[in-house]
Image (cartoon, rainbow, N blue to C red; front, side, top):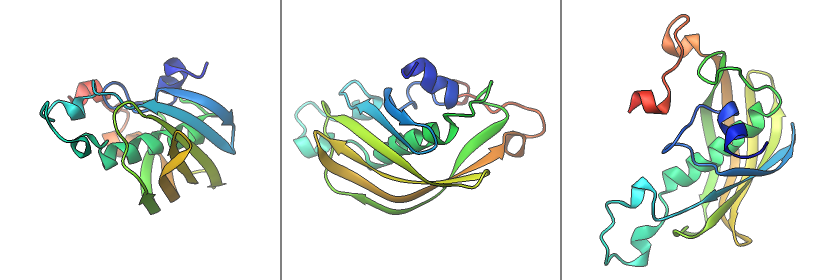
Length: 168
């Protein structure tokens, strides 16, 4: 099970905030490869006028980074999924260093995120990796650090964190 069911069993993101379509390779505790198809149907493209030049359709950098980060979370949680992704341990972005965007991404592209585990210290995970499109590197991540914390620290004692749909 490496499709949406497995992904949503590991991370709390749901449409439209879920930015990983499929896990295609996984070596637990070492590396993970995911795919994300960029399409014109995504909400971020609704405001782009019909006659806009190609550069207006560049995939937003924050979404490119978020998609890669979601892949990093999948690797961090692959062997220890939560029964309820809104409770127990939640994963927070603690920091990003050495991120470089090398080329724009357009609708029709399939992002191939490759995440490598650098270090796992129990309550923090350090990752590195790249995103490619058709074999060309479009994003490099020098280091992305994730912090694993109890959900009660974020939401108040015992209350589950709201889902993406509940926050909308």
